Length: 99
Length: 133
Image 1 (spheres, rainbow over the protein chains, first blue to last red):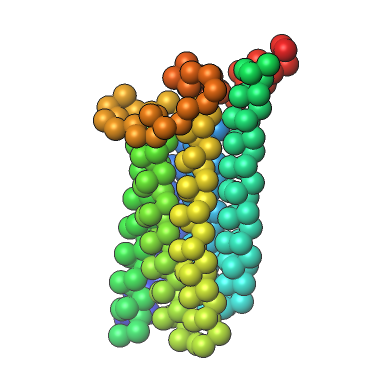
Image 2 (image 1 turned 60 degrees about the horizontal axis):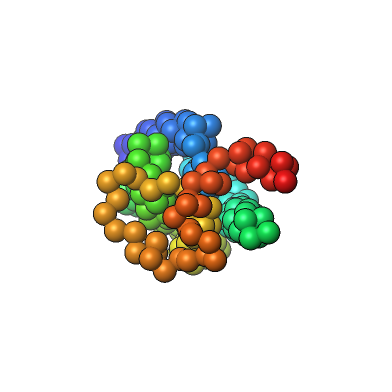
């Protein structure tokens, strides 16, 4: 009984996750600014981590969690790199205004 | 019993995740969107990871799940701070109902910063403006 309910919850979770992916993707396409898109990508990587976790529960394979760890590490680095890039844009603008 | 705890944790986590994505879609302003995403996203992933740890009931899996939670709790504030500061610097417009802009009084470039805000709002305009010089 409980196992069936867990399976139902996992299926519901996949549906909710798909909805969340769609919402995030709409924001990623619509923008309107570059940091909006970076935030959307950040949330998308979190959603992928949750997807991997749900999948590892659904298939009873704990090995997939290693991929989730790697994804968490890479997502942080990507966000930091994007932030540096945006900040670099601001500095370039300032120097071009001075001259 | 174990499965029931799993279901409870999963439902809490998925609720937070759905809230985060709806907030990202519907909120009016970058800062407000970041508020929805960085808190709700982190808590959602945390609850789902707790469900995974409870489901497998294995030492290695628990350590992995807890390490993911700790890592996200450590890095999410740093990442959103970086993005928010960079967005403020390039002048992403604030919501029109914003009451307080405390940083606006302190963030003085050599030129008048109030005239610069919004210049870099559109990246493509930035590229074109840069190539014209």
